[in-house]
Image 1 (cartoon, rainbow, N blue to C red):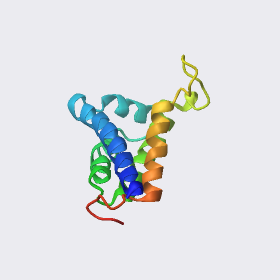
Image 2: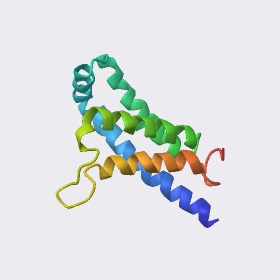
Image 3: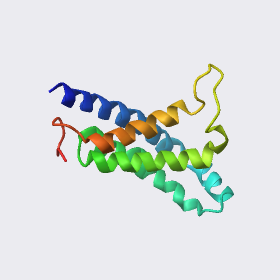
Image 4: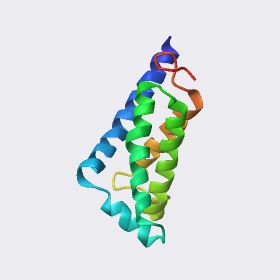
Length: 127
């Protein structure tokens, strides 16, 4: 029972926090991501994939419906985000002494945790 509550807390924390980023992109657009993609020689329309990683996948995780799949999608989303926006910060420390990519690392590694441990019993499906 405690394991399942812990999995629920992890899913809700990850899903809600990531969804808020997706909502911001729905409100303000993805032009910054389009520019980053073009600067790396990739098609601008790949930017719309962010909605899969920051809206669709978080909803899967929040509701526990194919949460493992949602976790993998979010982890991939974060690897791409780090590669595009923060490649020079990978081994850097921030002003307060912590890792410069703490937020990105939080999203990446909690998404991996959800993918590995599954949703628990407080989920639409328990796979």
